[in-house]
Image (cartoon, rainbow, N blue to C red):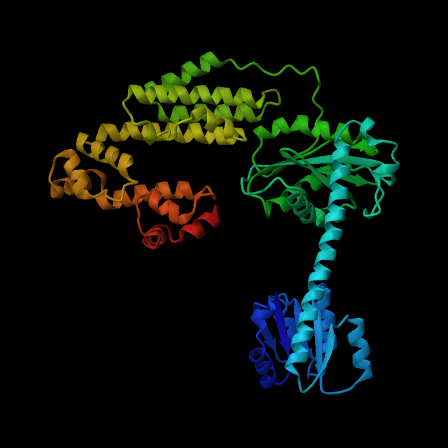
Length: 518
């Protein structure tokens, strides 16, 4: 619990702070202020559970200050102190639900008891507010889920409203569903998270004079919007853009889809279904965008990809070392996938999976270590985890670039330098990796190894080891589940502080700052 002490006498503030064992009462943090204005300033960054304040103070008295505090923190409790008997102040204290009115000079036993009462009052207010919020959330959640289902599940219609709602959905003729698929692994698919996201969207919703309820239908967050007028295509587009921008402030990776507008809540299941059908096309859209409703005929024939010629062409480009042509081939392929409504996500995944296997076959023929251009073991699992075609494109493009780089290096490097780099890629996790260990591996003296490596690569061997380790560290930092201390060990550093120091020296950011910048 947090306590704010406000009194214009410094000795009183310090005496109160030091004379009572606040820790034993459950108060962990204490701030002080010399008058009401200063007290409000403190409350901009400090949320007090209890305010112990003098009544009469210069600049702003305790009554006016508490009016401002309770506007911001309605659950806070106040204990007034005064050396005067003033009926008007007492009346104001009652209106502000003061827990107690303690006369000066302060009796510490009396004040301690007043603080206990205040703590009890704060807990009661919070519990009541949480219960009210939970009731409201549960009602919203249950109704919104029922509206996803067929109209037969709605009952008579009398049971679709609840006293906890601030509107009656039967009064709104125009409705539509919006579904959110979030790809951020740290965002939980829970009722509480659905509420948090819906509150985040409320400013946009209010701007368009909409009402909303929300639910979850795994793996989707579902929002039903209600309007008293039909939204034009232009307004729908602006709404979708505003919703996506708002969500983009909190979520790293998502797609949003607006379903078809329908007449009345009984048609919302149709709106929801159109959104789910169109969600497939988000696979071919960049992240953090909103897809508006588009009609797709139930008789649509999805395109059959003419794969064999493309696979042969890609294989030949790799074999002939046509780097720029291979890059253009992949860019053209991406353009075709993103400009076509009639390709299914799994068709794209299977197509790119075959391209990746062709790349692996080419690397094997060229005797390139696979980890140098396509690290990882379960390739199909990685492909299946891609939530959009752009991730597939990045995977094959980066792998192809690394493949050609590996070929170039194998043509210009001596066998010794190639062996050194391979050894580092296989042993960078080991804290015993050293120039001596590398020299023993290639059966050459340390001085000769260092000179040869520098002359062929332009950088020192130690510099190359550091860059290689930090490169792997950056990849591991992209996954928020990896602890920084664990990452240090994974890339060969026993001391996480030293790892952070080297990382900052190389990139100008600490590991945690780099992760936040992603």
